[in-house]
Length: 357
Image (cartoon, rainbow, N blue to C red):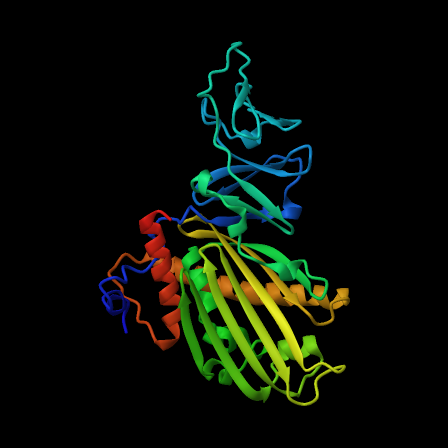
């Protein structure tokens, strides 16, 4: 079915999100890794807005609009004294709440002189930011990611800047048929791509579940578990949770006795996509496992392997983005059955963007 046919499928379905869709601002996005932010003034574009990030004297993060309201000089080019930022152009000073506390050329500071501040919450190793209506910024709605802090799991993580629209990144991690073709046998063979799957929508989230039974473990998981050559059941569950967050659960059930008395092994892959612009994205990721949790050398090797895999995704998606950017025509993509989860995700983002939610 074509994109046009999908959009016309139901009168209430609405359009599908793409690189032209406005950002969903009333949502928690990852602004930075905890390790990135210190007492240095750092700037980052988030959802098309320049943001200044730094830590206050008590260690908590702060976020301001990186634009002095006086003459638009970037505050990141100023200085930090205590919790206050002084503009490097005319010396106006701002607190972490955005209020101006000093204007060198006058004694009275009008209340109207202020820059925008953004709600931020640190849940190490991630710093989350709310770019929408601050009155709606409820920290309890930050997507759960407990595996990054559980004693029976260990994790590695990182960051990648991608020249691609964030909607396409979400679609990439929902349609995992690309594994054996883009990444080779490290992530799965053609049998995995052909395995049956189920798609379910729950509110504003979408889940796709794929199960491959009684099949040799793939090289990536086999190396992690230590059961290369064993036959296993493999269940992959990928969740689009919010426009900012995707989590995948992979369970490997060993059918040949397992390893060290265990037969079930669990892996969690977290993808955090924060739009920089309509065609560029901040890609934060974490990969957690309940296998070899004390093996630091294995963790480092796993981190390098994950980066290598993600860079293959990045290359593919950046090539796709370049085609969309350069070709000015009425091209209509064709969708297939495996796209169902991605199409549902795109409907959700488009609907939330239209509603301003």
